[in-house]
Length: 309
Image (cartoon, rainbow, N blue to C red; front, side, top):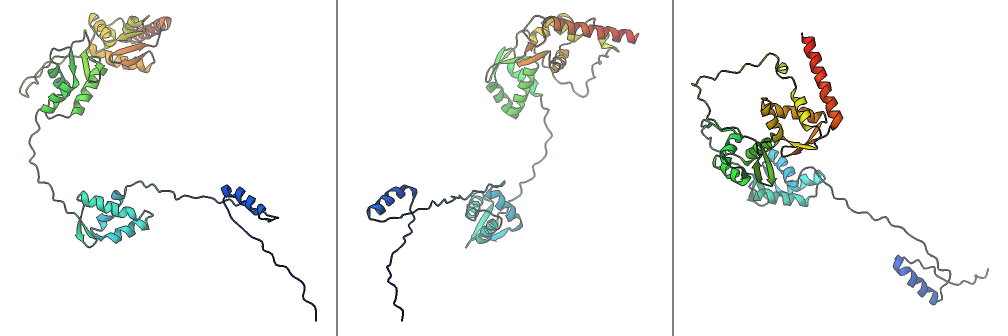
């Protein structure tokens, strides 16, 4: 019979520890007499639950479902949220909010019903009053003053049952037309030299219509210089100019003031001038270039007149 081999028992210990405790642990094992102590670095990937963002809120999502389920139980709403990848806890929040807003009514025991809203009583249609244009209402409020505040006009519009947005739009159009300028937020001034349009009463339907002015067959032939050339000659050598200057210029030359605004739009598109707001403009075309532009426009006008003959 073979003799049994002599054996000795020993252990191989596996220990997991954090990076911070690795150094002190190795030190203690060495002091205890352990040798051949190895280690292995383990890297764990840390993941976080990402919060889903939906295009509709929990209340809106619940309302759509309630349209097809006018009577439901709370657990059915929770299941509906879970089936569509939403947090079931938000279902309770949505139900609570809808109950506060009166969209649903609690029947007790987790049962809810869509609220039945009474239809509003029909309102008798009254004939619409003769509304004044917003600009005319502002001119009434300004009167003969040269300076005014928008808060005063707000009260005026409110007394006439008009919205404040109508006043804001009218003031913006008056700024663009160079009739007023903004001194500070809510503070305006009538531009010196500019005459505000007179307020006239609307004619009744029975009143005869005034004779209409006939437009001349060739309006360009009325002047030797076009409106564009007239403005270019005025602004040559300047860095800036104002709308009031052009109003005065057109009056001296017996030209309609309403032609200024369309002409400034054309010149701004042609990069000849730039609007700075409050009826002020910057000259973009300088010196000889302005003269050349004016001369070129004159040549085109003369050529057109010759071809007409």
